[in-house]
Length: 134
Image (cartoon, rainbow, N blue to C red; front, side, top):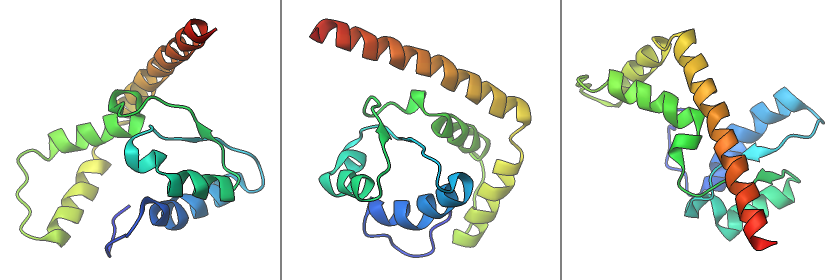
């Protein structure tokens, strides 16, 4: 998503860029939203937004980019763009789009595999945490 204007809160991103595609994809079906619990994501206003929209959020470790497939894909784009020197915002957007288009199905698969392995780590973490609490 390329933002044209300044957004004042994470809730605006959710409202305008997450909710419409989620409604289109899931319709009336239930789904669980996954995000880490970084401060912006766990703010009271954001938690309230999810409650107001009846969207459950998966309990996820805070600041864990290695557990997020999007972060892995963005890392690939960032490395590919390392030597790009766009002169303005439009060139930057075009470079990002062109670089994103170069990501191969194999790279998506690898990121998906890494994500699935990470889920195993999270489940182990959650089970260990619950075991310690009990």
